[in-house]
Image 1 (cartoon, rainbow, N blue to C red):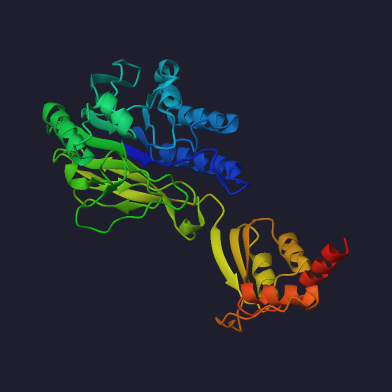
Image 2 (image 1 turned 90 degrees about the horizontal axis):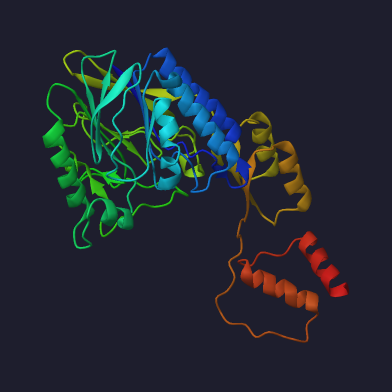
Length: 401
């Protein structure tokens, strides 16, 4: 049996004002190709399907087309849960139609999925927060504990959460009860969640730059020791870098986002996780690198010529460009940079402060020429740096207006 785990698609996401939709179409095709080439039996999408509660028409269209192709028109089950960027009601809305295509959409925590059967698989057991799938291609049933993103209100409504309780304890008890009831050693036991989970006593993982931070109820995070011992693999969403916070024997995997979505992810490789289970229930996984998408770069240059040369040689990149200089950037320099490269997302001029201004309070001579007063003011605000000719010309225009 083979299972593909992916997450954090963020369909419709932009990098500042730059659309990523074209890249997302390409990388969704790549994920579909991997699933088909590897003859995957089941696909898990662990939340943040969209980037916004109210996604664009183009993002919605891409999502439905992607999951339909992943499901091979009902021949392969696809299970997708809501993340903290998703509207749970919006995710749930197409459920009756999606089920007929082999797509199981789960918006709310502790949701019960309807039992039903298609030609190649059937849902044989279902409980709040749990489902069991029997694939025709395997004698082993797949048990999945599923927990979409849950904020405090949803937890109180669906899990009976008390404000005094730590979320870690609430989820641990809920997962334990489900695992003890349904997860024996005759099937494949998985947990699928969109949560900010860390290893207790380990490194505190940073949430992605620009990502909505998760802080649920009175708990800052969930610890991996809440996962029941019966669970063989935990499929997580939320963090955008591939990471195993479990063990080789019992992996707890953030599969990563399919594209670099912020400059804090510049240079980061992206993956899907491919899970293999043999006839004895032995489970292993490998990360499969995704090749699509424009590379993101944070670059700093000390002169215009070096910047222009690099930009000319890296036309496919998206760039956060810092240009250091002895004086303020001229309009023609800015124009030259943007004409050389269409993928400059942020341009950050940085003036080298060669002369540090005195901290002593100086008396202002109001009898000075206004241009000299402006020059003194500018130097006081910019570490002693003189305004360049362009700035002084602009000030003169204002004076003469």
